Length: 161
Image (cartoon, helix red, strand yellow):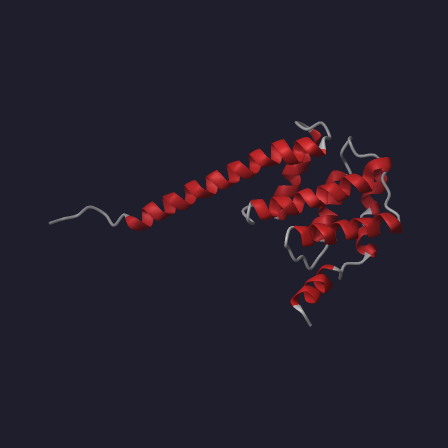
């Protein structure tokens, strides 16, 4: 089996039932996914994974995005699937950019905070302003930590002659 076929197969293992399970929580916020919406979300997930060169064996990040974002005052039934699809793409974009320096849960929670507060529900501001700043800050912090670790390893104490 060619690698590309294996890649596609791994990313398509998720079922819409797993996505529909999130309705239990989302319903209390006036949001509901039907079978078609769940399938659209899975297609968006597969497209984002392919576009960002990632393999994901579970839909847990998607379920967490739904569970955390369903409480947003900026998401309504008429834009629910569309917003989730964009959030999924943004999530995987960020995961690549921060190179796993932040857990899925931390990233999703930070995305939600920005989305609801400083972005006022704007996906464009979330991706192109707030998350770009976060990515820059995480990379800079990682570089500082790397350089400090390198200096610690290189320093071998005072020379005594």
